[in-house]
Length: 244
Image 1: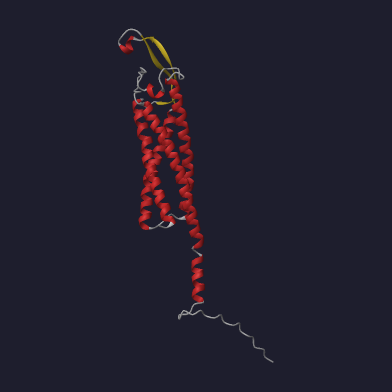
Image 2: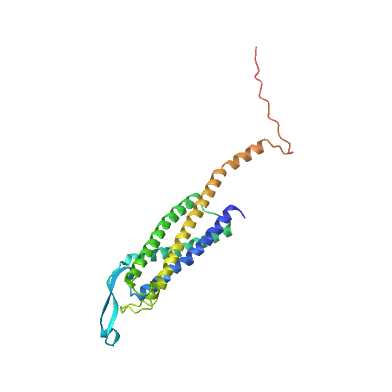
């Protein structure tokens, strides 16, 4: 298998993994957004309050419930959603394109390979930023629901604790941790995409440089090889005739 076919096969595999990882970002985020009624839990602030709230439980007595002062900015969740959707679309399109190139034994042009490197590097930084923001936002929300880690349960266990909010918090930790792991995996895949795109650019550049030399070398070989296969001796230089 030639070098360009190995690179195409590796790129095709990375595109397929990128498609699957992007779906693992988009689907849990959509489920979490539906459970939270369109609100973003990332970077949300609040506190726990203990009071007698008969309307919450239908029974008398003191209960502890979460009071959300401010929900997180929607852009924090939308940024991760954008990276996931773009990864799904790009992985599907480029995966099919790589399969077509493998079947046709063809590769990108030099300019197309250069643009692929630039695009991969740009989305790599976007994906890394989205992963970092989501990790910080989830840590902030966990700090809120555990009351600064003073509650007798962890953030993972808190999703089974009633918050007495108007949203469904029964699976927020499962959804957001899956999104977090998938986003970091998407970032790693975009790093692999950038490396593979650079290797394909280098390979295309090497072929572009060596290709113009081949016709010239063929002409030189044909010029010094006669039809019988024996090398043609070089012609002696012409001796100038001196007229007296």
